[in-house]
Image 1 (cartoon, rainbow, N blue to C red):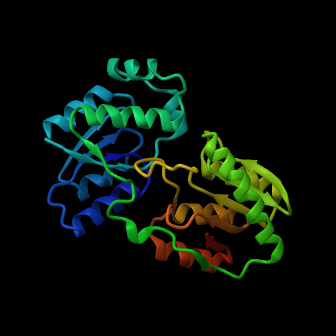
Image 2: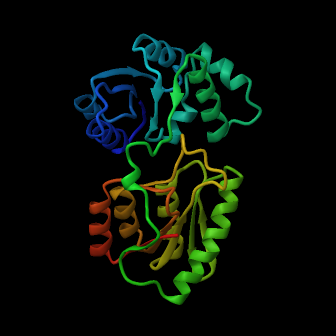
Length: 261
């Protein structure tokens, strides 16, 4: 796996192990990947973000033929990038440098060395959100209306590869996610809206399930409670709920509704 930050890489490693994968290899990034991942994989190689040639050499040396991307890279590190010559060549060929274009280019580099990039939900299918109310009280009519509005706009910004999250309150969009990521968009939206806002997080209209799939974890719920959000709406079948039981428990205790559609 190519492991970014958060609990996602660890959960993926554990799920792959339970599924019978005998050898798990991780390419990890300094100042990003949780060091405890070492306890969950068989081989780990640490490198800087941007060392594409080193990543490819490592995967070749380990005779890897299937890989997954798990976890994000902090936006600040994307602007503090020190790319090696291979990454510079890759970036130089791109007309647009957004998440999708970069990930597709990396996937092509992996394919060139006979490494197939698997869907990011592989081994974690049970963690995909199912349709319906997953936690918390039933939505009011106003909250349902805010979900509808947020959904329409979130799908559009996702199509434009701007972000995947919208914060709405009483028919007004108060925050739009961009490079800062979902957590910071939530904080900004909560500050502007006060209590009772609705968050909508969607997949792209033509989501490539190999990377950048919507993910929600316990930290998402903690920030939602901190910023007094009332509802979180996600896309069923395309959103990973990492540590689902803990998410649902914290949402119930925080009186936050989670709905998937």
